[in-house]
Length: 474
Image 1: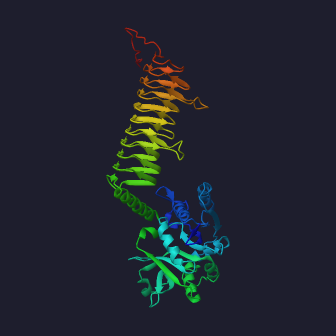
Image 2 (image 1 turned 90 degrees about the horizontal axis):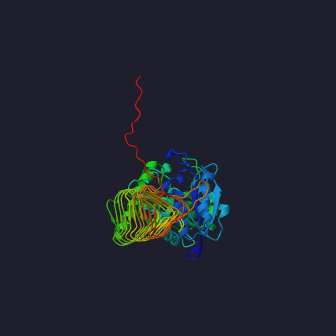
């Protein structure tokens, strides 16, 4: 809850409309790496062990608040509050709305809901620079600083003010050090400064940056924590910028994985939309997407064009191209693939699929809420749902478990060493005894004995000299 012995309260500005996004969806809810821009910022606040997180909403306020409320209820570890900015009269006016929710004894960190990739360690350094008594600004040098507030320094290098781009002179616009929009300041100092803001400027808005001149007038030190990583302060104002930031983020993730030893066929064709953990000697081909939490064991190979979410894949497993693995968020629903398994191509593993060692799941096979023990095989064109499949079972092409009766799901049990022929229907609830065989084309509605051959199909009839009907002549 504290940084350097002082409580931290985070204010996130998320009231803007985002006109250039050309979307009905509020800008801060557009997704980067699978999560809303604003959720990235809230997660960063959680990483600071913030005491309170105050989100300032405006445009699409109800939608934004609803989107954040659900994750917060799941145990975020901080007090989440919402305040409204209506109408939107500038950044200073926005933070003014948060004042009643901010205790006097904390350090306030101001963030933007459309700047998603600021790192926790950067903000910790900014808070240390604040030291509970100073106004600390996160700054950066840009070759093209257009649109950003310029940092004004005295001859000694001390900061004197921030001049917004529209109010800057030509000489001031030549300055390359800019304010990122992120600051840390004691609440006891910030509150009276906010009360003094006015809108006498080119945009007719209340600028938060004017607190710098108030600090200078009051003799409060204004310090900068300057960084060089532009990605941490990059904002999103258009679909083009969102796409650029997505690729920059993904390339950073890809490079980090490759530095750990992961072999990526092409880092530019790779997406992580959650958390990906890789053991040694993992290989990933092009156009793969990883969502939720995915763990890849040693020597796992992922073929091209796979989509994998919420899954644990054991050492030496091979996921052939075009496989879709869609586990759920809970341990029960996460997909598990055992060591040495072969999956795909064109296989689908749904929530609750649990596969043992050296299981083979082939093309156009779907597994849902089912366990397959070591060595079981379903090599093509099959469905196994709500089932328990024993060791070394061979499950034929075109066969399905009929697990749903129109109202309830039922379980199919296939014991060890069973052979299921092609085009069979196993109508649950049913148990196929160990070592048994089900003849192709059978519909099984009753339990079968261990070791038995079971055939349940109509007797074949052939009619000799049969004549096909002929079309009538017109």
